[in-house]
Amino acid sequence: MLSFSKWLMAMLFVSLTCLTLSSNEQMRQMYLDTDEDNHVLRSSFFSASEGFVVFTKWIGYSADRGSTVNQKVSMA
Image (cartoon, rainbow, N blue to C red; front, side):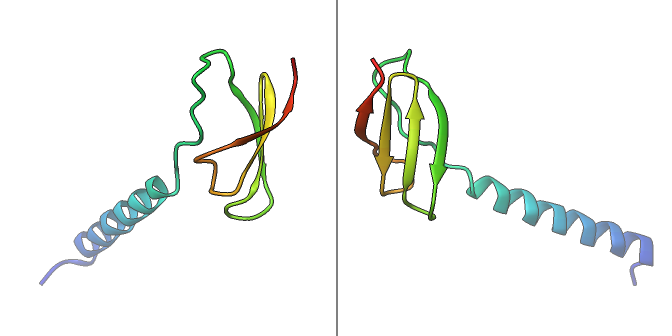
């Protein structure tokens, strides 16, 4: 039979492993522009999938969680 301290350490390990795995799944890569100088400055999503993305050179709208961005306003 396991002692309480060993049981506690095992439960802590399992809990931390589950938290780490679930937090990594939340991060996704957003849109990649072909212009290396056009960086994302800010993103503002008003739902889980729709919102605006501000780049160095233009502002765009995304309806698919940032995978594709439609250019709306040019800042040049």
